[in-house]
Length: 138
Image (cartoon, rainbow, N blue to C red; front, side):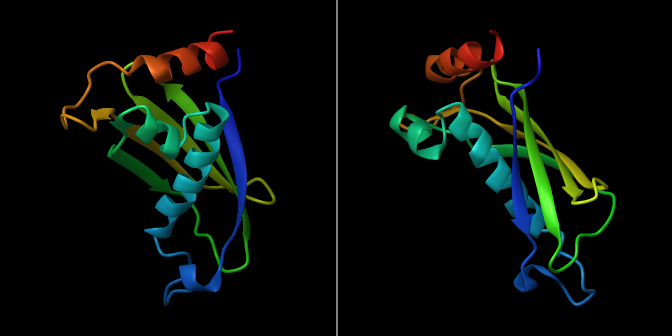
């Protein structure tokens, strides 16, 4: 079984580079977010659906490894892959240039928080479990 994943393309804009003519390290998180939202749409559980289901999903951990710098005008493939959904949302990411060279890899972890009580959930809500099983366990 192939893990659920989604790839988006980002053209590095001028305003994302720093004085060293490379993408400022904080902008990579923005690229990950764009890919994460695309993957969540595949699950039909993007941020509007999360909110409607009564849960927020804050990022509680983010690890990035910068392998090579991205530069202005480069076209980047950002792939998000779902690693876990039963107790938390854990995604891995890879950013490649058009030639296939890996520039960055990352992992993020999100947990469900009940919007009414503010309490963290130790098991993913049924609304995510059902979507995950339907797409990932078939």
